[in-house]
Length: 466
Image (cartoon, rainbow, N blue to C red; front, top):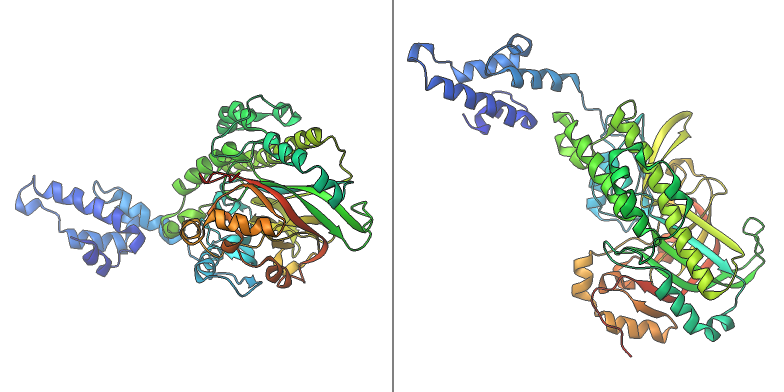
């Protein structure tokens, strides 16, 4: 009996494999017994569908019967609604968001203007859940974040000290998949309890070696000019121009390992009725796995913050300057927050926290500005904003479309020096940051503008020109 016939008998599509295993067991049995003892497969399958409770003790159909019973205990609710900011968003992102909103514990959702397809939840997706966390709705690079350090230097200082600033980027961090520091860096985060889960315990040594590194992809460390039009008491800065260091990276290999392990555990527990939501498999927060993931995720948040702290500390030492202001924020994280009068777990995958008065940084690209912003606490967005401009094309298409060296020369004419990067990260692969910012004026207000001047990213093999 094939899957088409089983479906006609009323077997749910997500239980076809269970039914086939039972049918194959009966077929093997029928080949070993006399004709009068053989089981009528169609009749037996029909009985399991109608009366599964009566078949839980059957030699061949027990597992299929229990699967039917379990399936009927779960009724998929209608998806909740979500609000969208921005209009330059691909249909795939909307499809992923709609899937996320069909989770049984979904309590709120929003889609930011930088949205594009991700794994499970789209990048730029915000999802609030009742008493559950979704590892892939947090993301592979747990606690990827932004950090800006402001120095009492001017554009004149930047021009005068160009060689020193370049050297500080070259020596202050390391880029590349799996890359480690030559010398382990000290930070109190390594004194925390890394034995809270097996995976964090096993990854502690490697994490220590990677502390102060920047990884690959869209991660960067760059010098630029910060322009502040008005005095800002919270920043502690007067109106004017400043030299600033901006970095973007996360929890490196340790965070990726945490995501992988707990995503696998979540998928193993996923009810068959939700098998189409494998990338959105959840962990109940009342479960041991849920509590373990939460502890590991928060440790990765501390580690990612420490990673930036080490990078900025090393760069500051190399340039011999003391910071006068700092702004930093996570994305790719989940927070336990109160919204609409109840506690929920808010996942911001590629989205910036934007509670009322909360400061953050929203970057553009290597050739476009970043903005220091202050959140407005918009409840409809679950107090969130975009985490950047958002990609308009894949990495593969970017490499096929753009010549990195040509783009690099064009940026140099505009006063932007790119020390290393790849064609998959040039400005053309991203949406227009100013358009994105214009689409979320009800979410954040601009505090200051950062213009990149010296950019360091992971290269794609392209060699620097003399």
